[in-house]
Image (cartoon, rainbow, N blue to C red; front, side, top):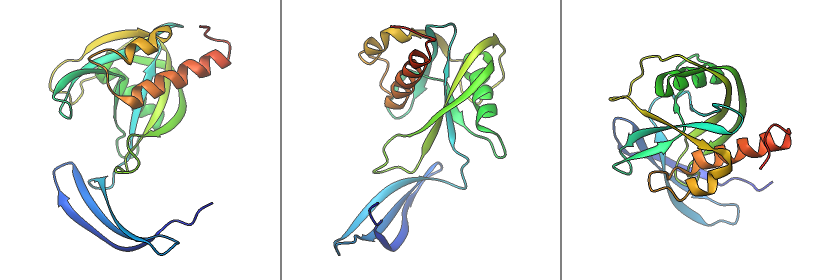
Length: 188
C-alpha cells in the first residue's frame, strides 16, 4: 500500500451554512509538495443514506426533487442525512417514509459510495429496501416530492433521461440489480 502524503498545513479558507473549503498543504513520499482543496461537511456529521426501494421484483422507487446544484428538478433515489445516534438502516427507512411515502419490512446494507473523492469528504451508505408498505412521515423538504419508478431492466435508458444525472444513484441501482441477479432473484 502506498504511503499517504504528509500534511504540512491545514486551513479552512471559506465557509458557508453547509460547507467548509479546507486547504491542505501536502508533501508526497517523493518530496513533491502540492496544495489541495476539498469540500468538507460542517460540524460533526453522521453521514448520509441512499435507498434503493423495490416496489416489486423489477421496479425501484424514484423521487423527483428540486436540486439547487443543477437548478432543476431531478429524478433520484430517496436519500438524506443520518440523524445523531441513528442506525443506517433506521435512517434509510425514515428517509424512505419522508420522501416516498413507503416504509420497508426488509432493509439490507449494500455498500458505501462517494461522489467526488478528489474534492469532497462526504460518503453515502446504500441500502436495499424491500417488502414495502405505505407510510408517510413529515420530512424537511419544502414541497411534496413526486414518486416515480424505474425498471431494473431499463437502467441504461435512465442514464439518458434529461431529469436524471446523479451518478451515485445510477451506481446504486446497478449494484442492486447485479446483486439480485447473482442471488437468482432477478434475471435480465
